[in-house]
Amino acid sequence: MSIENNIHATQKQMRDAATTSNRNLEEVHLIAVTKSVSPEIAQEVVQQGIFHLAENRPEKLIEKQESLTDERIKWHYIGSLQTRKVKQVIQRIDYFHALDRLSLAQEIDKRADKVIPCFVQVNVSGEEQKHGIAPADLIAFIHELEAFPKIQVIGLMTMAPNTTDETVIRTTFAGLKKLQQQVETLHLPSAPCHELSMGMSHDFVIAIEEGATFVRVGTKLFATNS
Ligand SMILES: *Cc1c(COP(=O)(O)O)cnc(C)c1O
Image (cartoon, rainbow, N blue to C red; front, side):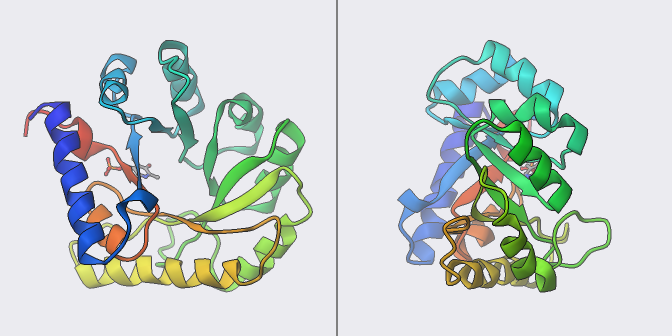
């Protein structure tokens, strides 16, 4: 399979998932996670018209941006970010998917010179090794973020447990959707929270069925020998 074929196969699955769940495909965006490929390979998805790209390390982001200069590209940062590295990345990105603590919000607010569209990462499944705000703490956290004018909470992000149990995955995504609706109904100017960043290569179909508006797909786009 070529990358072009992978993209077409992924887009077909996205279409089918939107149809199954009676959703408008236009509200679901495919983010190509380029963290494990070279800039040259990443360029191939751009040539195929995919303009949302995601990285999870500052150095890799910078490397990609030096060779991928198409102005239509939107850069997403999806990894957990050390507070001291905020200044390296924050001016370079269009979306930040891993807002999970106040100290990080504070540093973003200090270093950014424009408003940054952010997703608050939520640990819906409660797995110990996972980053993210506990669901029970989310609303208080959202209110605390009101103090930072450069932080705009456009949505929530989560990762489902790494399991083949579809029910567990579905419950996790449905849980994030419920939380997103709770935040949305607060009507805070700092947290419109219309978006849901959820779903990766193995579970993006379920994520779309449960309301994802951004899916983050790496392996499925870039694996060319299987
Ligand atoms: C790597 C990564 C992805 C993509 O995972 P694949 O299984 O390769 O599709 C999505 N989201 C996050 C946060 C990641 O780190």
